[in-house]
Image (cartoon, rainbow, N blue to C red):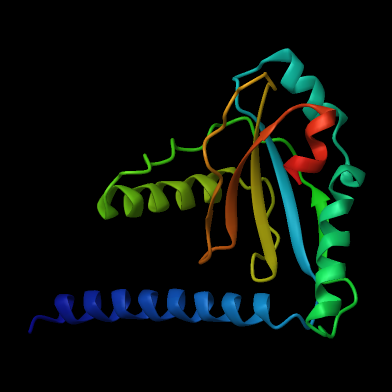
Length: 179
């Protein structure tokens, strides 16, 4: 075999092993409950600059998401977790770039896998900080104007990568349901 081919295979194998090791570390550390998981909420105006949604996003603060931490704390007592507060939820900066459109419910495996790749790349490009993602769940929330009989798409998440895309209404009376 030519030397170039051997070097190329070794580089790809090293990259694959590094990614597999990182994914395994993330899985183990995020499920050990030895330390609180960081939940970072990144709001997105799903209606491309709708002023009502922008105003709602501007009014958000960490206190809006406090019920999430209370819920996990209550549930942790049922499972005898070591940590008293299993999650710490905070609001991250708003993201202005829209994520790739979600696959249709009847999409095939190839379309779903392709969406997962595009979504991971979008997350990489649009996570506005460089904190470690080993113990951090990034939740991108697309806010929509509320309306009677208005239905939203399903929320989606990727276990490997600890990322989620949530569809929610931009209305104070919906905060509890959004959480």
